[in-house]
Image (cartoon, rainbow, N blue to C red):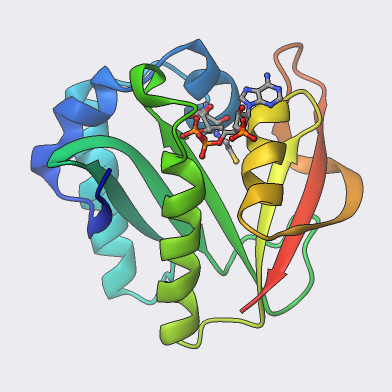
Length: 169
Ligand SMILES: CC(C)(COP(=O)(O)OP(=O)(O)OC[C@H]1O[C@@H](n2cnc3c(N)ncnc32)[C@H](O)[C@@H]1OP(=O)(O)O)[C@@H](O)C(=O)NCCC(=O)NCCS
């Protein structure tokens, strides 16, 4: 399967919404997405990038179709060290388990390294999300520590227990 990343565009909103399921809501988006809301999110990222925010999001393309997203954000510091660049991702349920996320994480690490944005890539996976922890391990990250998030909550509204994985850039 040919996996590539492309900077997110408004036109990708429909595919991103179609790729969302309960797991995406629980571990990535934090709520049900709409096409309009996703377009606004993409516009906002673009506006914020122009005024110095460094978060960037990409569509994950598999054999010509947008099947998910991966983003990086050097400004996330919850549970991370200076120089760490946080990565988050989601893949459509119908194509999971085929290595798409691992490849996308590897590609985004290449982009972060090329742009000299930090010293380590970091994945903060919920302790309740074994699939994401496995993606981190398969993409060459090593477990660093577990912490209670000061920004993210679990489905009961309690601070999320996050397992932090890091990889040198
Ligand atoms: C996490 C997610 C991105 C993984 O995408 P994916 O394309 O299926 O990932 P990959 O195929 O590259 O690798 C998944 C690995 O996790 C494993 N896995 C899947 N579910 C698992 C589970 N419940 N327990 C343990 N391992 C699991 C797979 O077997 C695979 O490992 P293997 O190749 O050794 O068998 C996808 O499940 C998803 O979008 N989840 C919802 C959003 C999310 O959790 N995002 C993470 C936020 S940081």
